[in-house]
Image (cartoon, rainbow over all chains, first blue to last red):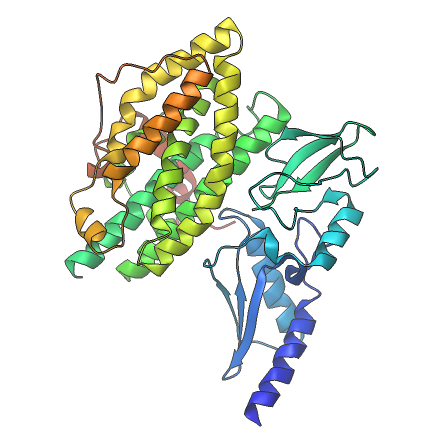
Length: 162
Length: 253
C-alpha cells in the first residue's frame, strides 16, 4: 500500500534527521528541541517543517542548511524546508531526553510545568543547589538567561521557559 | 490589487519597519553595552526585533507578488517610503534613554501583539504568537531597569527623567490608525489601536511611580511616521543600514 510505504519512508527520514543538532547547543537534536515538526514526501520531494525558537534566532539558517545537507548526502535531492510559525514554538515541546541532556551539559533545562510563571524548582546543574540568583534575563543566546549558583558560585545558563 | 490586499501590504510593511528600526538601534549597542551581560541582552533583544521585521517583510513580499524579497524591502527604499513610528528611529542616546524607549514600546507591544494573535489573518496571528512571548521578556527587563535607574542614584534618576520627558510625546502616534488601517480592523485582521491606550497608560504610570519618576506632561505630541514624514535621524540610520547593499548590490553573506 502506498500509505505504508510512505510511513516507512517518513520514519527513515526522521531517523536520518536525528543526527541534525542545534548549532549552538550541540547536545540537542532538532527533535529534542521540538523545532522539527513534520516530514512528508510528495512526488519525490521531501518536505520538512520546522518552527523557529525565536523570531531572530540566527541558528535557524544553519539548521535549514544542515537538514538540506543531511538529506542530500542520503540521496534526497529535492528538499523543501518550510518554516511554520503557528502554533508558536514553546519549551513544552522539548523532550524529557533533551532536558536530561541539557542538564548534563551544564545548562539548567526549562521548567516543564509552569511556563511564564514562577521558576519552580530550578537548580544549579553543577551542584544541584536550589540557591540560585538571576544575573541577566539574557544569556549567550536569546533562548537562555544567565544565573549564578550561590553555593558553588558557578555561573550557568538557564534555558528559558517560553 | 484590491483595496484590502493593498491595506494588508501597507500594514505588514509598517509593522516590519517599526521592528527593523528599533532592532537596528538596539544593535548599535553591540560592544557598547554598560557591561557584558547587558551588551548581550540588548543585542538579543535587537535580534528579536530584526526577526519580526524579516517575517513581516517576507509576508509583504508574498502579498505584493512582484518578485521583491525581504531584503529588497529592508534595504532598497528611501526615507519617505519607510512607515515606522518616529519613536523607533530616534538615536540610542544614553542607556537611560534606550531603556525608557524600550519600556514605552514593550508596554505597547504587549497589548498590540496580544490583540494581533486574534487576527483572522493566519500569518499575522502566527507572527504575533511568536512576538508576544518575546515581548513579555522584554517588558520584564525594561520595567526592572527603569525602576533601578529611576530609584537609583541622583544622576541615574535625572537622566531617566529627562529621557521620559523627551520621549513622551512620541507615544501618541502608536495609538493612531493609518488611513487604510480601519478597514483591516473592521475585517478582524488588524488591531484597533485606540483601545490599547488605557492599559499602556496604566503600565507606564505604575512603573514610573515605582521608579520615583514624575509622569511627564502630556502637552505635546509628534507623529507622521506612517505617512513617511520622519525625523532627520532616519537618513543617517539608513546610510549605515543600507550601505552594503547600495555599494555592492545583491551582495550576500
